Amino acid sequence: MANVTVIGAQWGDEGKGKIIDWLSNRAEMVVRFQGGNNAGHTIVVGDKTYKLSLLPSGVVQGKRSIIGNGVVVDPWSLLDEIARVGAAGLAVTPSLLVLAENACLVLPLHRELDAMREEAAAQKIGTTKRGIGPAYEDKVGRRALRAIDLKDLASLPAKIEKLSAHHNVLRRGFGHAEVDAAALLASLKEVAPKLAPFIGSSWRELHGAKLAGKRVLFEGAQAVLLDIDHGTYPFVTSSNTVAGQAAAGAGVSPRDIGTVLGIVKSYTTRVGEGPFPTEQKNEVGEKLGERGHEFGTVTGRKRRCGWFDAVLVRQTCITGGVDGIALTKLDVLDGFKQIKVCTSYRLDGQMLDYLPADATQQARLEPVYETLDGWSETTAGARSWAQLPANAIKYVRRVEELIGAPVALLSTSPDRDDTIMVRDPFV
Ligand code: IMP
Image (cartoon, rainbow, N blue to C red):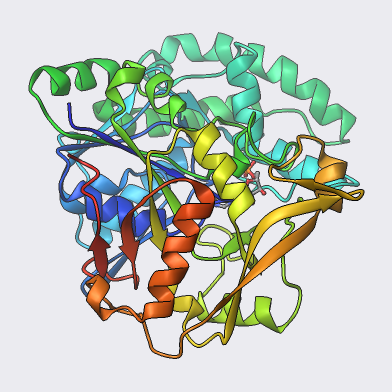
């Protein structure tokens, strides 16, 4: 199988949506393998803009799309999204979308717990409050409801009771009312028949695709620095976001995830709390944010902005399993006289070429920068190397050198066609 797995290589929001959309044009099946509706992709096709959250980007191209078992699925949110894209002219039917039967569900009680914790915490994580963390906790705690349960309504009351017993203890601790089990059952019964036609087997679909020699695109959400193991813990999301998760979260062999493409923004952003060594709380950060339209797709929050951090991306290419990168939003750097790139950190008089695992050390890192000359010309909309200013090419080459991974794609605007392919990830 000539497959491709796409992951974010910074803190998310690297512009995965556009690259995934571009690649899904060339794939025959598209699969989400982790995360939930905390993710947000904006896809621009001609004069239409689609905001996707749970739906794999393949739906926009009419490609068979799978929400894999590694995803946590909020049934109400999924149905809303299907209705929303339906109103924009995109019919998501069971012949287009499969929801893995063994995917765990995000319920209102998860969203409520997420919000209660964020509001009560002295040190907030800055979650999207979509209930993602609590849903994964219940999955690992072996008390979650799964998509398949929506096909066996008679089994729901006992499962809800088991889950409620756990949550009621937590809710009492927060001074919150207990779970209304009857209301939850009623609302699950309402959505169950709407979702049932989509429920199927991720691994069998993918095995069939493999036998038929189909090209599959595995679509990651969030990014390696938000990975539960490899990210800036505890300021992370609750799933593994590295490429290896594509296998576990969809039900395929690790050998079948194909080429791993890491999406990398030409500078750095982060939403939510947590360390960010190259953050620019000044006019540079403001300019990057304004020019890059750095507001969250899901929550609308303003993103924190800073210079490119090559130390981090070098590390995420290693831990994420990245073969090559897609460099995005180069045009946001147009017009900067000088551009800084972080090449190492200073910590207590020592130089580090990696991100230490300790959160307090991470917060104390001093970035060491290399300064490159900027360019005054525009790179926006460039579709070939020949259209790029010499200093922009130098910047890209220096990034490749510092992170130890080649640039396979270069994206120069949100438009699907403004993409320079250096190496075909599907080959
Ligand atoms: P959660 O995934 O909602 O639990 O949030 C945990 C952390 O991950 C917070 O810092 C969020 O801002 C961040 N996060 C979750 N999803 C995304 C995303 O799609 N893009 C960027 N950050 C995200």
